View 1 (cartoon, rainbow, N blue to C red):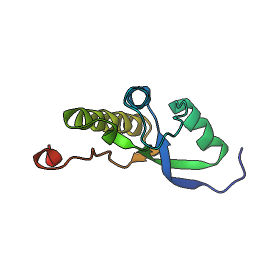
View 2 (tube, one colour; view 1 turned 30 degrees about the vertical axis):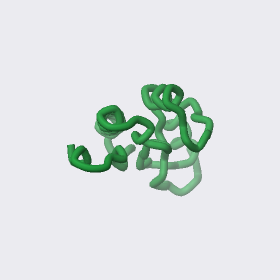
View 3 (cartoon, rainbow, N blue to C red; view 1 turned 180 degrees about the vertical axis):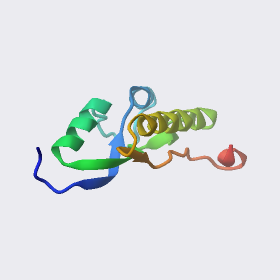
View 4 (cartoon, one colour; view 1 turned 180 degrees about the horizontal axis):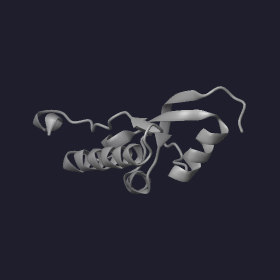
Length: 109
């Protein structure tokens, strides 16, 4: 049993395979390395650090790595993925919604 006090991690990046593939294909403007990520790794990290809840957010550059409809679809897929993690692990996860950078009429779609 871990003797650390229980915590809520309010800034926990997730990088599902489909998002990592989009960055590999379209590039990351920052040039940052995208690490491998799996839910099981996050769960082990949380257990070791006495983190009871993690608030997930997609790592930079977010859905804006794709433009227009592609960005909207990537954002939706990331949000659906995070929602499934939350729903399948009650109390363990929350998430910040991923939104694409869109100018004009498509913003609210």
